[in-house]
Image (cartoon, rainbow over all chains, first blue to last red; front, side, top):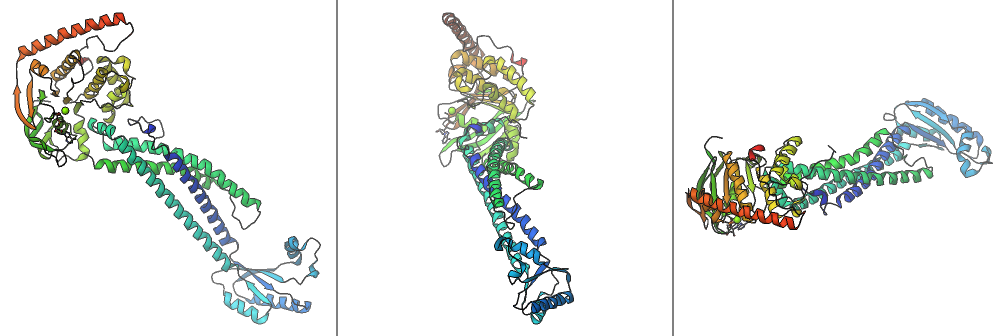
Length: 294
Length: 275
Ligand SMILES: Nc1ncnc2c1ncn2[C@@H]1O[C@H](COP(=O)(O)OP(=O)(O)O)[C@@H](O)[C@H]1O
Ligand SMILES: [Mg+2]
């Protein structure tokens, strides 16, 4: 299919179609970024959906009185233990807390130096059926210093945000496809006008519309493929550069820009998809135009 | 094909856009295997009538049938099949300039989906036959008028059309070439091709004595055969001596300026060889 196809029309010498691969390359460049974004956001969103969902953190603010702190902790643990739907819970050790705080406090800080809150990590059996309101009310009643940090609320907002950005990226892809189709239609119509005489001769010699359309389709496919490959060659390094910069920030919240085999297949398919789009667009444009002729 | 009508016009009228009728009430039929001259002054409508015959135009009114099919009711996808049975020598050749002589002649076979090996064989043989063996790779703009004419005729006959239409085929060539073209057309006609030649060259028409379709300001005035075979012979003889003269002159020229080759001298072998 990609082999050398003999052409009866000098489409390869058309000045007006010369810009087409570059325009398509630009479209594909944008498409690569958009698709890369979609893939990354999708992976991130589902990771967050599973990873932090199903847990919550109970925090007990420290008071002046260590004994009261001790009682508070015991009381909270009692409430947690009595709560239906709790699968496991774990008081975070002071050592670990100090380790987490080390970047801010420095290596010499000791556990006793600061009034540290107590943190209890609670794992839920089933997030959806958990009685969050009742649990929170019960805790506050027994231990006013206790607060419940439910990650779900802000996490859900984050996931929603990601989904919205994804939708925007998909809309951008649709616009890119439409712009590509429009450009190919325009180029093909111009080609039909430029080669009117030769096309008429082909007709009079007995060529079917599909024969003529095939010539335009073959040419559009080659231009689309060329543009697609150029766009991919430009787009992937750009995507990598963004990923590299993101990684150098070493922030776990930033999406991970390493792609698996499936993602690579999707990227490799972009030029083929664009070539196919250009081909079918050119074919139907020619068939529609010729259908109006004798 | 046995005797029958290749083409039939009934009360055909043609106008371009909103202009006046350039053809009015044209009625005639072409019998299979016939040879007609189409004559008339410039602007009489000869080219327009041929365009109707090779399906480049649709009539404004009247009925046209080709190979038994009413073209008004023939669906568009079936028109190419009709067109493939018609060979056309356009007045202005209409060769595709970006294609070599070979590819131009190959076009009718390729659009018909003939295998490339067969295309190669047929086109090579025919181009040899019309004396363009050494110009197969040349593009039309680099060929002389006579060479282009031969390419366009080769393209018209390569697919062995049942109907051959030639619009002023002798308009741009000298008498010697005109005669050779007529030889070719007569030979094709002898092999069964129906032929219509539009021309204003009355010497040619009177000389060959084939039936005449005469257009007069859009009306088909006469359908007649001169049947004057002796006149035909006379004309042919006069052309043949002209051809011999031209050949002698060419030879003399070549002796003076060696190495220049444009027109081929060799008489064409029988066209049966490739048909
Ligand atoms: N494409 C066209 N549009 C409008 N008028 C045309 C066109 N082609 C031919 N005509 C007119 O039709 C008439 C017949 O032209 P044509 O068929 O070319 O005559 P001929 O070939 O006998 O010289 C002329 O008056 C010419 O001006
Ligand atoms: Mg004319």
